[in-house]
Length: 81
Image (cartoon, rainbow, N blue to C red):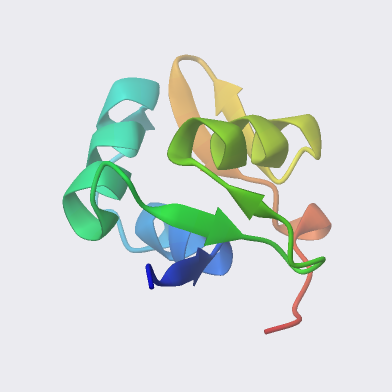
């Protein structure tokens, strides 16, 4: 059975980066760390592909694409594990 990764792990990739990440670099880091076929979940336990979880996070204003870079909107990130 494939491991399901919580979206909070994606937030960590942005927080731990020493540089601003473009959208392409952000997505590539997700693929490098978790694999192209990784499956993700959120706090409501829905399951997503990489593209779906990114779309979800942007639609909920948890991550933002500003000036061609990915940033976190910490005000909208829940603290549940």
